Structures are given as C-alpha cells and as structure tokens.
Image (cartoon, rainbow, N blue to C red; front, side, top):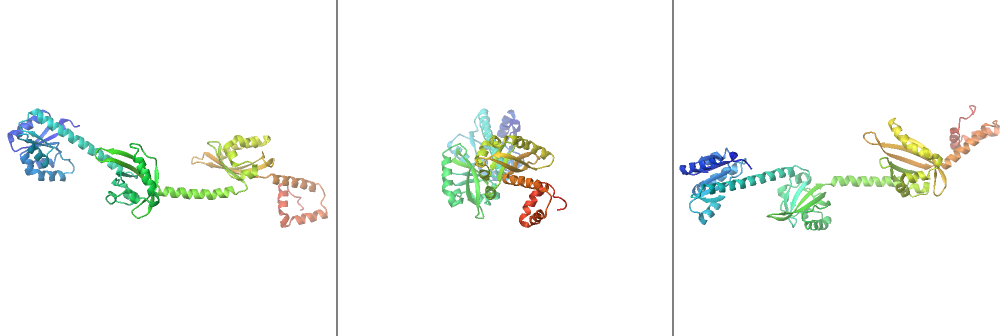
Amino acid sequence: MHPRKELLVLVVLNDSVQSEKIRALFERKEYRTAVAPDFSEAIKIIQTQAVDLILTGLPLLLSGKESLFRALRENKNFTKPPILILGGADKSDNIIETLEAGGDDYIETAADDLQILARSAKLIERKQASDLLNESEDYFRSLIDNISDVISILSFDGTILYESASIEQVLGHRQTDIIGKNAFDFVHPDDRARTVKYFYENTLKHGEASAPFEYRFRDSDDNWRILESIGKVINHPTKGFMAVINSRDVTERRKSENALRDSEEKFRVVLDNSLDIIYQINLKTKSFDYVSSAAKGVTGYEPENFIKGGFDFTHSLVYPDDLSIVKDSLNQAFNDIAEGIREHSIEYRLNTNHKGLRWIRENRAILTDSANQPIAIISTARDVTDQKKFEGLCCIYRKHCLNRRPKPRWMAFWRSAMTARSFRIISVLSKCGEFPKRY
C-alpha cells in the first residue's frame, strides 16, 4: 500500500469553511489534498493528477456526475477514485440516492473526525486493492497474449468464455468471433465423442491437471489442425466451475513423425530382407540398438538373443583364439576416429547354433555427434566360410601348379581360364600371388 504522503484526497464542496476544515483534517494525517468549489474545477485537477478519494456533497455530485464520469473515462491513465458523500441526516433515501449517483459510501456531515477518516481510509484501501488486482490481471493477460500456446477458458457446458490473442496466429480465429461459441462444435466429428468424454471426466477432478490429449480442431479456413491440450478445472468465486485449457498446434510435428515412421518402416523392410546381418551398437550404453532378422540365418540365434544378451552373449559365441580381435576392434574404432578413419573391417570365427564354427567378416562404420565423439557403430556381418575355403583351395592349387613346369596341356588350361566363365577363378588366384610373367 502507498504511504499517506503519496495519496491525494480531492475535496469538492461549495462551502469554503467546511472545505478548509476537511482539508486540515486530512493534512494532519499526512494526506495530500486539493480543494475545488465545484466539479468543473475538480475535473481540471482530475485530468492532471491521480486522485485517490473524492469527498463531496450529494447535490454537487448529482449536478456534476455526467461531466465527472466522462472525464474519468477519457483519462485512461488513472482509475476511477472512490467517492465519499457528506450529507445531512443518515437516512436510507440519501444512501440509496448516493449509490445511484455513483457514490461509494455515505456519511453524515455531523460525524466526528475519526469516522470520516476511518471511512475514507477504508475506501482508499479498497481502491488500492482493486488497482493491484487490475495490474496483476493486466500483467498476466499480457503474458498470456504473448505466448505461442492458446489459452482458453470454457464453461461447464463447453462455451468459450475467453481465448488468448494467440488463437488468431495458431488457428486464424479472431477472439471476438469465437468467444461465446461452443468449443465442441469446432472439434472433428470423429474426435468429438472422446473429446467430450475427456472434458467431463476431467471436470470432476477439481484442481488436478489433466494428461495431454490430442484431437482435431477446425481452423478459420475449415482445415483440421491437430491440437495437444492439457487442462485444469478451477472454481471461480462468481462464475462457478471453469476449465482452463492450454493448447498447442502439433500438426506439423505429427506429419514429420508419421513421415519418419514410414521411412523407418521402408528401411526396416530392406534391412530385414538382407542376407547380411546389420546391427547398431550404442557406445554410451554398450548395447545393441538394432539387430536385423538375418542374424537367425547366419548364426542360428534370434535377434532378440543378441539385443537382450548384449556383448556378453556375443563374446560367448566367438572362437576363443579370436576373442581378443573382437574386443580390440572397439578400442581400435576410437583410435581410428582420432585419425579421421571412420570405417574398418575384421574377421573372426563364430560358433553358430546350426552350422558349427563359421568365419564372419564385418564392415563397420562409426557414427559421431556434432563434437566428433563416437556415439554408435553400424556394421554389416556376413558368413564368409565358403569363400575362405575356396580361397584356401585355390592357393593350394596355385602352389601345386607353380611347382610344376608348364606343358602344352597346362597352357590349354590357362587359355580356357581366360574365358568369362572362369574369370572368378583367376581373380581369386590373383589374391594368392602374382602369375609367372610369361603367362
């Protein structure tokens, strides 16, 4: 509350003696005062200063109330001050006439100084509380009107009592066009029944915030927007139970999520139909984020066995002599990142559930975050046992051939090997060493 030295009492009386008496009374209590003989002079004061109380007589108020209230309406910088009427006998007719004229309280002229001061202080205190409430409402209204979410207040039957200014930006509706209408009329017909059910179920939970709820709401262009809303029921002292709803438009987010989900489904179909095992390791949790269904065909174990069992299960299947290769490969991956290498390959033997010991070749790629820190490994793994056996046989055959002197029959073999059908044999033999220069 303001100290009295900041409060201004305007005394409007045509009796100069009484005016001075009232003025001296308030100044002794450290109020600021101003005196006017009528409301034409009083209005000049009101137009330049914030008045906290007007003390006047009933006849003067009746004669000057129209110009007074017009001046108060025009001066938007100040709020209407309370009006205390000084009158004759404290009759009920005078009190009623005072209230009808726009006065706030009535007191007899013969009342003692303490009663006048007490009534005045009460009216000023009430005005200050009202101003504080208005300032608070204006402050929170400005906050609400400047947030992107839509704030709605609905009555118990769904009638819109208030909409924040953001509704025009989000849905295109103007506040004045939508207030007074029923919110459920804007809800998509397929969502209306469950939305009404959700609303009334939560109105029974007075004071509790509801869980987020999604539904389609018609915008000003008759398009359907997906809103995500949460609400809370409050009991207003004069308007009864009301629902305060906070809504945001999630249409674009849902579209993006659906598009991403469709894209993931397409890639998952491709991955699940690959003959190679494709998996992703989360380096933070040291676990598998994904293992393709090809794991069953290559290892004889379901993908869930690797996801649930993690590294311990995988390492238990690796041939003991090759286990160090597998474990060291993770450390090598971190070293490769530091050197700018993001891909590498390893080979090791794995005890499968249906084919015994098999050779596995992996090609790994390292994923990093924005700080170039490793976050995941994506790898493809395939069974290369048959290829390893064929390469071994080819090397043996090559050594056998090179240890013998070529003869015409052997030369014929080399010529036939150059045909397109035998090209794969030559490419495999070339991995085992160079051919004699004369061939």
